[in-house]
Image 1 (cartoon, rainbow over the protein chains, first blue to last red):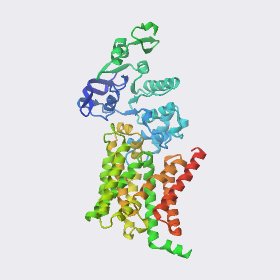
Image 2 (cartoon, helix red, strand yellow):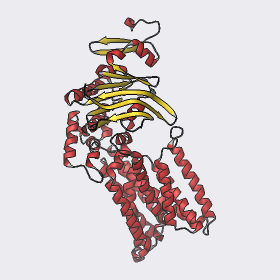
Image 3 (cartoon, each protein chain N blue to C red):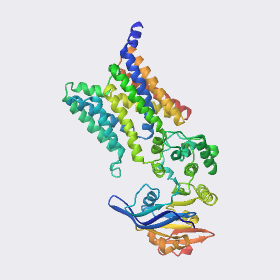
Length: 256
Length: 271
């Protein structure tokens, strides 16, 4: 694994007087596929906002590599489909910081945006309105927009939320392909442990305001996950995939 | 007929038309963003805040334009913040501001020399009563607002559509939000004491609404909105002159009719 693109050292995060996360020490290294998981309200969004540079740490240090180019894929439910924007219009937004103030996107920006749409398999739908696309297609558009930044770090917030099973698998395969082929470092945030554990090499698990970091094999343990989620769980491995299921206290894992 | 033509050719009607054209262009353009950002009632509240500024100016002898802009800018700064939105809905805040400044306007105006007549003017306005020397000023300020808005449209669009990604891309979204409200508040502040609250609110809502029903792409929506506003303005002026009707109300009815027709057309064609 390469040198860190982003380094958190003893970081404390919060809003107002409330501390949400403390003692966060984490390296996002080049070539990493890092999964961030935790139950709802555990501080995933807080950590994500700090990673994106939106939230400043209350104490500690966040260091970013000089050549960091960050592409961000927000939760698509956060976007307002009322806007009459095409898929290409949205992907072009990723070029705005490069275009600069006052100027309009250049033909080269359009070409690059089309190329990004092609990478996510949506070139044909470039002129289609965003609101007319399916959930999976919208997710691909947002990934294409993040690619238009030409990132070396791609951060995805709950990219499979609300998608059916085949679409979820297709989106995750796309992310993995981008990671492997384009050598993009990935940070995948999700509350669905099965999803993250299947693809991530390293995991960050949020527990009681702290971040546990380790390899997937270390953290995908019944004892650890029981502490995180506060319920008994079973963890089983099928091929390269982890399957996690909540169980009743008296159930034995083999029966789950 | 000749009497109508004579009225139409009068400097008063010509000035009203000139003012209506710039209001239609700027209001139609900005209105698309106002409607898309779901801040229609912020437009109304800002107009009311600005009207209170005019009422105060008339009472204490300040320059109404200066006071209107000052109040509108203060209102813009207020709405650009996120005040306690975890506890109350934004609509409640907008409603509170609207109500407070409506009451304040009435109270201030009631103590002034013209009393409730002034309140009526601030509400309904009269585009036919705009002084000739104001026309150039409105045009210059309108063009300035329009130019800045057009130049920064892609940043305003990104921040309106996806503020979180904009922040991740390095945009200071609060600053951009403030800039947007500044433009909106500034525009409202400049014209409120001339044409009244209702007409400005109409320009910010009706043309954009109709345009969104018939046009599919953002650039076309903006074009149709400006066209709607221009057609509504011209039709309203002509009809009000011919039938001797209140100009502001006639213009608003014309814009509403246009919006209604476009809405039906949009629904029928499935756009």
